[in-house]
Image (cartoon, rainbow, N blue to C red):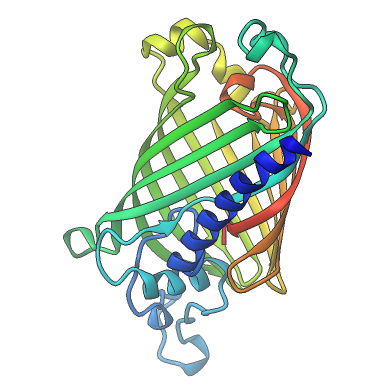
Length: 327
């Protein structure tokens, strides 16, 4: 009970901060969607040119999974430097890891204790538009930041075992090309990404990447393919994790299905390159609770749950709340 009393104020403050940020931003944003104008009037050219009414170019439906979030973002980003959500933002007060990576933390934990299976996991992710409508084109330069933390809060001496910091700089190019039916190719993004855990010594993990992404969606589905190129000349990369590419792969694939205010998404990494042997897979489900909060369940299986665990295989499950999702 004394330990619980210590944790309650911290958990309450964490939830309050997340809730306040969600109220300020009002809604989630897409993977990397720029602020656009007059979305409901966006049209694309049909394959053949004709004057018949039956061949009119289709309008981009406001029910489109990506467009619906971009439209809401327009309302909170009327000027530059307005903060919006980027990737999913959530807190999981219950997060259970079946096989903690105890060997890598030997001699690094308070009183050299083994890691507990249950802990708190949370992720905060936001972005800021730096330059909109670049050279009068529907492109936006973004600065983004994502932080994922694993907190051994239920230990008698709580500590953060891992926090991964990930700043990004990317350009999101709006395409909205009609692929057929209700499907559109929404965005092409290119950027630079740095991720590290801030440790020194043997626990340090870091890598730098050039990234690109194609994002397509329909009324209910979203698909994103994000390959990357790793800069291997980084001293930390060569010293601490030279084989990271073997486990983290060359990109991610995201598939999401939206229905009745809920979203089920699967993000997989290194599935194709390793033939599934060293993949990392995250299955998530968000469902509405209030206007600003959603219930959130997450399952992870494979390698690379965090940077420190890039070469460690585990299965985990978490339950909590989210303020934003992919769409």
